[in-house]
Length: 76
Image (cartoon, rainbow, N blue to C red; front, side, top):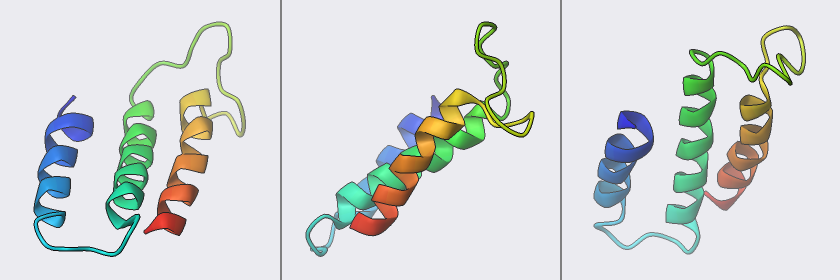
């Protein structure tokens, strides 16, 4: 909750105080949400019916966060 809520709000609020290029704030949001979500998934137990998806450490949440990180980086 702290990373995906409070920290992201504070960073985005400070970042958007000045005019930025189009899609920069959206890109920063997607990039941060994907990174924070992947980080949090390191500490969660994987779903029992899915388990680890790849390399015995990559969970489905981390796998689904990768497109968000890539698209956020492209937007930014």
